Length: 426
Image 1 (cartoon, rainbow, N blue to C red):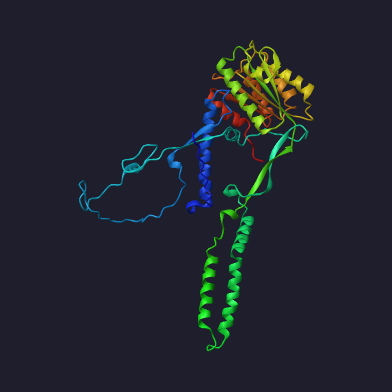
Image 2 (image 1 turned 120 degrees about the horizontal axis):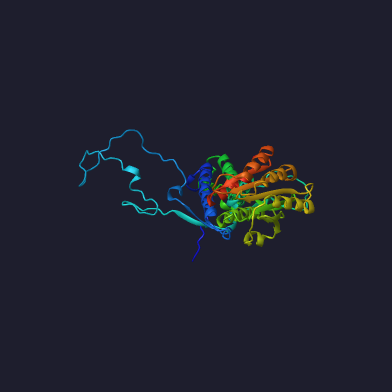
């Protein structure tokens, strides 16, 4: 396979305005974002980190433009043919007949295929986790974790139009024009002096042929100077930014997953896909955040990443066992004074009757004062059970730091994930 890359260096191709171009690019981003959202819901948990093929309908390929038609009410008489006679009124084609669409050639012209291209793994993840963040992150320990910020790092001769440095580009254009026309300008200046001196002489002493040659040479040089382009591709300079790690806040994410017998294989797969999204988001956006994996049925166990996602151990359900283990780990390794503590819990909501009130008390009294944010997802197509209603009381008391959502089918995973970790405007 041969890959071809076409680089368009036109500043404003076909005289399209920057606003038009921006809207056009935003429309492209919507198509890419929609394709990424659909891809997430179709993929398996081991196939999340690949690129994606994006298809943009042919009608959205072209930039919008205004056309100048004749307008008004007009009467036109055309010559007849085998179907029409002179003076017949021809109805306007319905539905844009005559234009190609969706890869099917029309009867009277060529059609257009949808524009299809691939985005890389990094680009896929960038769209996947766009505008997401850990809520309520505060500065506690600057040594543990790094965020990235983009800082100005000089100028470059390659870039996108919205990063053009106008002042530096114009300065380069002026320097180029001076350098290329300096000799001609000096000669024009000399010729002007000679012409003025010659014209100041008495008409009888004036050398008409010499004066004519000087005037002709002056006009030729001035035309040459005017032909120099006002700005050239070589003049353009773009603002360059580089990704700089910034000391940030220490943070730990607790992932609590219910693996009890009531969780069907399909429910467990959806829980794993949610936690895989969360894990990828943390790994991509935060350099040194720590993740603690806890699986539980009747008893809880801290496990590594491999066992969390692939172990098949199961049993009854006591949700409070996972919450108590989380408290123990916080006490042993993550003092709240130095760590931003987060938790995400996934369950089908099925719990022992007398355990849900204990979970509520543990959360409201012991865990919520320690954490920055706690999210609970209930994965079930059925009605909510006792654990959900117990957690509703916690949400009422800690609405800024506690969120809960229901997932019914795989199509809900990504929208719920985005809703839980959506960046909030300041």
